[in-house]
Amino acid sequence: MRFNRRQFLKTSAVASAVVAPALAQSGGAQAPLDPNVPTGPLSPVKDRLPMGKIGAQEFSRLMLGGNLIGGYAHSRELTYVSPLMKRYNTDAKILETFELAETHGINVLNSWVVDGNTHLQHHWKRGGKMKWIAQVRVPNGDLSQVRRAADLGAVAIHLTGDASDALISEGKIETIARVMQLIRELKCLAGVGAHGLNVIVESEKAKINPDFYVKTFHSHEYFTAPKPGDTNDVGRNDNSWCRDPEEVVETMFNVRQPWIAFKVLAAGAIPPQRGFRYAFESGADFILVGMFDWQVAEDVAIAKQVLGDLQRLRPWRS
Image (cartoon, rainbow, N blue to C red; front, side, top):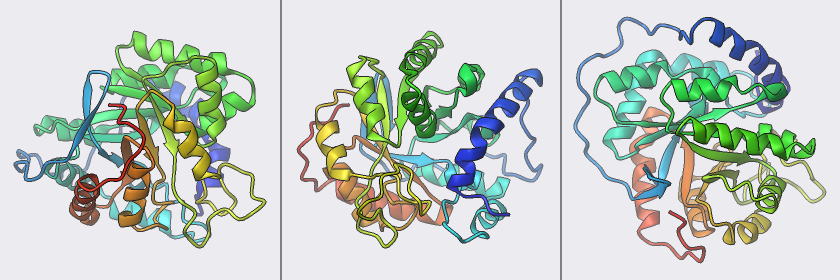
């Protein structure tokens, strides 16, 4: 079955409306893990990454994304990729990935709350310290995903990019402000995600003042990048989410909040050596990257090398 970014965007509102109430009615129960997953203590930490702060929370500059675990492939017309990712990322493999990430210095996972965090809770029971930043949507103003994220142990919560994009396009910036207020009432860091730069611009104008922004960012140096005349912030090729990177750099330079850049590799179209450097040197304070287990050590090494040799103009905001 094909499941790409466009279909995800079309179905997410329906899925959110159905799944969130169902989770609430079930008391927040999550799917059980394979009984054969590892249960022993984690391996000792073998590597360290440069850290930054959002509020009082300290995070590794390289963050672990949840898309590959959830099967959100953004694989254009290659219909087999999402099912392949889901088959590869078994319960045991996901836990192995978390362990590898933490032992190599990554201390935070970012994922959608509706996917649950059963694997992360198991990781915590084994002694893991991985923090969780939860993505949420608020279909028709329903805030249940926000409350669920806090109940499951998120230290930070942010609106997904497509959710913020839709709210801004509908003139509902007051909903964004209301979400930020609730997140803070729940004692979590509050963030705004965005594909379109207009989300950041309007949030700054309205003085929403989130604790952080999560904004797509990458160069156009890849084959299926936006072409002249393309105006959609999401992109017609299922991998273009940064319509004008130079405009993003200029806008974010004056933003006072920490900036987590995501889609920095344009769904795998840009090598990490180029994508990581471009993001950090252009002003991102953190980068959010989906990784398979076999990519973790290499990505950490690349991030450390890039962070140790930066030419950066935007001051670190954390």
